[in-house]
Image 1 (cartoon, rainbow, N blue to C red):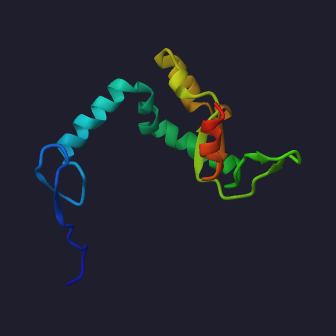
Image 2 (tube, rainbow, N blue to C red; image 1 turned 180 degrees about the horizontal axis):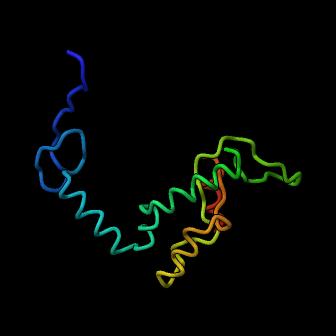
Length: 124
């Protein structure tokens, strides 16, 4: 029979209700997301359609290549860029206006590969 394979129901990690192929049921997922956003409101930027558009623009600007420079030769890395890194962290925003300024400004973003994105966070 053609069609999508059935997902094996698993118990929700929080309430124990059976849910298909997830660690949390939809209700517990909404509650967990709300808790996360109340503790770290800056994460809301990542859910915005405007952020997704700016992210695509940043990756297009870099032509899909990591913008990190290596060594004293200052050559670009050359690996495929998969992540967009905020140069000024959006977690430093004190107001909603600053959050939008930091979070949606393409000049505050760099396209990085899987190797250089974690390195950029460790350098802070």
